[in-house]
Amino acid sequence: MRVIATPHVSERAMLAALREAFGDLSHSEVAGPGQFVVDLPDGGDVIHYPAVLPGAGVYAVKVSPYLPQEAGPAVVTAWTMLVSLSSGQPVALLDASDLTVERTAATTVLAADHLLPPDARTAAVIGYGRIGRAHARYLRHVRPGMAVRAYAPQRPEHVGDGVEAVADIRQALAGADLVMLCTSAADDVIDPRNLAPGVVVTSISTNAPGAREIPPAAVPDIEVYVDARTTLDVATELVQAAGSGWDPDAVRGDLADLVADKAQLPSGQRPVYFRSVGLGIEDAAVAWAAYEYDNETTEGRS
Image 1 (cartoon, helix red, strand yellow):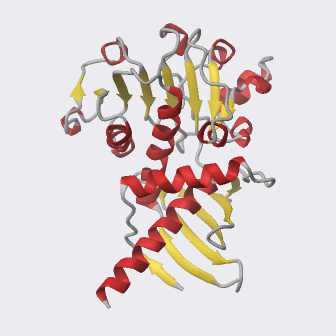
Image 2 (cartoon, rainbow, N blue to C red):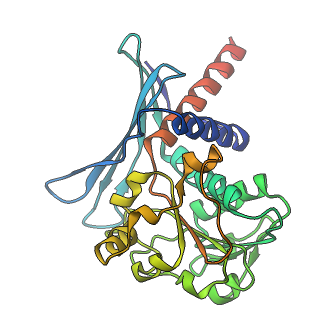
């Protein structure tokens, strides 16, 4: 089994791997499994992200421990193992910490590219740490003409690379066609009901207990898309909205639908919301892409 400590996938290859994986999922009779969480006795947990890549002939599972510490920040790691479906033997073990940041941003941007109109001009990134910067980078890759503003209250000095730093969220949101929420919040960051019809808002998950970035009360008034239907059982604001009477069948499509052009596209009459929580199919696709890249570079050196 090969251990790949510093896996690499280019932005182009990352997006291509995700498009292919979700495209395959769209016409598969087997639904992609969701996350599985194992709570640890002394606090923390380990999330498992399983998936099958039939074309590659591998089963993959990413495990991501979250280990709170008495002093200092929690320890968070991520490792993906690829297992051959023919031999049953492990093929590779990859450090997935950086890959997770990349696939999270690439997944958001892949969805946003399908949900935005062709003439979308301005994007706002709320929260500009590693994941926020990756979101901006992938957006520049698929929509190079869009201007990007970032609100980064903790570390504004990290804003650069053609991204405009702004002083507050209101300034970031003004006139934005796309709002990418990249915070570690466990409570509301914005209310999409205050945005113009057609504005696309994206949100990701974090390790914060009950993580959410919009109020559950807003969900019935926006057009909701998800990375997968299993997200409806995980995303806090969607779960709480359903508990208050919102019908999950109102979801207009998942990412596989969008990639395959099967989803109902935004009507332009209400704000649009894409919610992702991270899926094993994403981790499997990018791990396989990294494994193939490592094979190519290894052969090139031999």
